Each structure stands twice: as C-alpha cells, then as structure tokens.
Length: 116
Image (cartoon, rainbow, N blue to C red; front, top):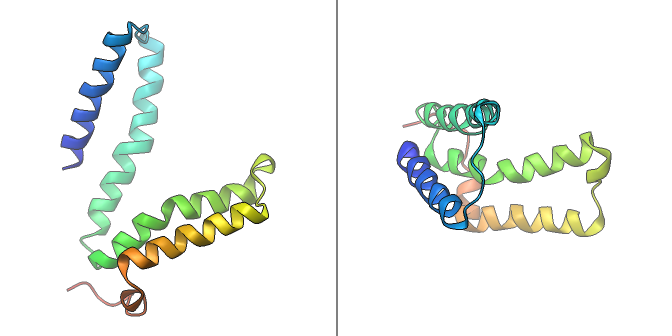
C-alpha cells in the first residue's frame, strides 16, 4: 500500500515538473534525494508496518496521528528558533484533542494491552 502511494506521488510530481518545465536534478542531487527518501519514507513506513504486527491498530493510529505533534514539541525544546509560544501551545492542544476525537476518548483509556 505504501509503495502504491509513493509511486503515484512520484508520477504526479514528475508530471508537474514536466508541465512547468522545471530543471531536473543532477546525479549528486539524486543521491541526496535517495538518502532523504530512505530516512523519511522507507525507514518510517517499514517501522510502522512492522510495529502494527506487535501492537493494536488503535494504538498504532494514535501514535501515527501524534507523531507530528511530538515532533513539533521536541523541536521547540531542541531548536532556538522554534520556541513554544502561547498560540503554538494552544495549537498543540487542539491537535492532540483532534486525534482523541477521531480515535475516540473511550478508546484511549484501554490502550497498551496485548495485540489480538
């Protein structure tokens, strides 16, 4: 399923590049894109697929839904230019609330059990 998604995205992006007559990358840029794709797509998607064989789907969906929230919270701690302001804090809370609403508040209390 992931490969299907990535292949279609690749076709669409190449269509845009050709349509807008944008310059294509050289060999060095392709190498950089390959490494970036490996770390940003191959490893995370493989780990998510593997992890879902060991935990419940609802826990996996919550963890997948909160990874952007966690990344933003960690970036605010690590990087000086990403400080957590009042409005950013409110945004993080709304994002977490949105994940809980989509998954269901009653489901969040029963997480952590063995996968069935």
